[in-house]
Amino acid sequence: MRLLFRGAQDIHGRGLDVAVTGGGAFAQPSLSGLDFDRVIDMAGCVVFPGFADAHVHLREPGFSYKETIFAGTRAAARAGCGVLCAMPNLDPAPDDREHLEAQLAVIRRDAAVRVIPFGSITRGRGGPELSRMEEMAPFVAGYSDDGCGVPDDALMRRAMLEAKRLHKVISQHCEVPGIPGTDPESEWRMAERDIRLCEETGCRYHICHVSSRVTVDLVRRAKQRGLPVTCETAPHYLLLNRSDVQDDGRFKMNPPIREEEDRLALVEGVLDGTVDAIATDHAPHSAEEKSRGFEKSASGIVGLETAFPVLWKSGLFPLDTLVKAMSHRPREIFSLPSDGDFAFFDLDAESVIDPARFLSLGRSTPFEGWTGRGRCRANIVAGQVAWME
Image: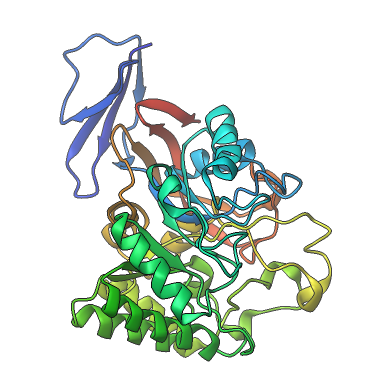
C-alpha cells in the first residue's frame, strides 16, 4: 500500500511530506501530485529521523521473563525509536559468533525496529580473556561488558587495540571493583584510566550512562585534546537528584542517582555537546524483582516509553538539542543506519505516565505519575510503518 503522510514540518518549521511506497520511504516538501492509496493528515506534527537508543536491555536470550525482543521493540516503535543497540547482559553472553547468533535469530524473527547488538568485550562478559571480537565485528555496534567494567589495564588495552583494528567502538560501563557504586569515584576513576588508554591506542571510546560531574569534566578535557572520546547519559540523571530517591525499587539503578551538582553538570554537558547522547539504559525486571524496596530490589528501570516525554516536558533542552542527542549523535558514533526512518510527533500532547499502559514487560520507572509532553503519532522504520495510532 502506498501511503502519504501529509502536512508535517521538520524541526526548523519547513513543510515536509513523507511517502511510504512499499519499496521504502522518502520525504519532500510536497508530494501532493502523486497517487496514494491512503493519505494520513499529519498537520501540527514535527517529523525527524526516529530516535537511536544506544543502550537498551532486551533480555533475550536468557531472561525473557524480564523483557522480550518482541515486547521491547514494540515499546520502542510506539516511542518513536528507529534503532536500538542491545547490551550483552544475556545468557549466553554474545562473546563469539555462535552465541551472538542466538540473539540475532530472535531479532530477525521478532523485532519491530532495527536492533544492532553489542558484542561483549570479554569471554562470558566479565571474564579474564577477550571475546572473539573479529568474528562478531560485521554484526555488532561495538563491544561492551555493560554491568561490569574491565578493571585489568592490560586486558582493556588489548581490547582497545583490537577494536581500533576492527573500526569499532569500546562502550564501557565505568565501575571500579572495591569502590562502592554510591561513590562517584567508582565511575570517574575508571573513566580516567580508560581515557589515558584511549590516548595511547587511538581507539574510539564511549562511556555509558555518565552520572558524575567529574566524569563530565574528564570527557570535556579529553575532547579539548582531540581524543576520540564520547559519552552518554540517561533521562533519570538529567531530571532527578538524590533528594528525589524514595525507598522503592523504581529508584534503584546502577549507577545511582547522584547530587544536584552532578545533575546540573550533566544538563550543561548536554547543552554544550560534551555529553554526546541521551540513552535510556532501558533495563526491565520482573515486578517481584522490583518490589523489595530500594536496597534489595534489582538495579534497573525501564525508559523507552518515558524518555522523550519527560525530557521535552522539562523544558531544559531545545528540540534540536534533543533530536541531536537522541537521534543524530548516536547514529554517528556507532555508525547506525537512518535510511527510511521518520518519526512524527505531536509535541503539544500531554499525558500522565502510567506504567500499566506500557508495551514493555517492565513497569518500574521513577517517572510514574509524572506528566509527559510529546506523543509519537506514527513511526516509519527502514521504509516500513512500525507504529501508527
